[in-house]
Image (cartoon, rainbow, N blue to C red; front, side, top):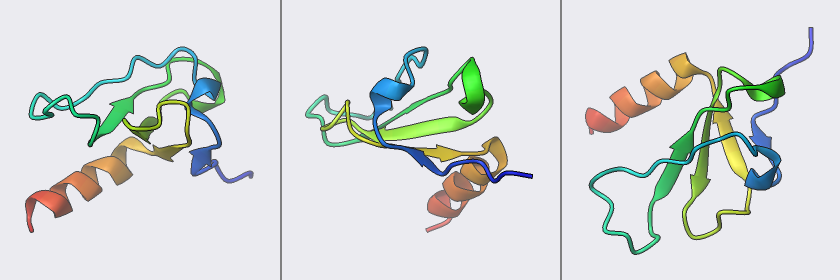
Length: 76
């Protein structure tokens, strides 16, 4: 079994993703954006990228891993 990649070198490699920002974002491009690839080898994962570098790399998370991460951040 092959392990899923943890990132993609460029967000451009995820053409079908609709990137979203938090409603708390100030629009100053100092936040992260998330999106869900709908097709291809990354379908079902959550992609996260830096809004300052939209063509830069994106991290990939399983839905469960992302839920655990966000729950831990809320608990700080």
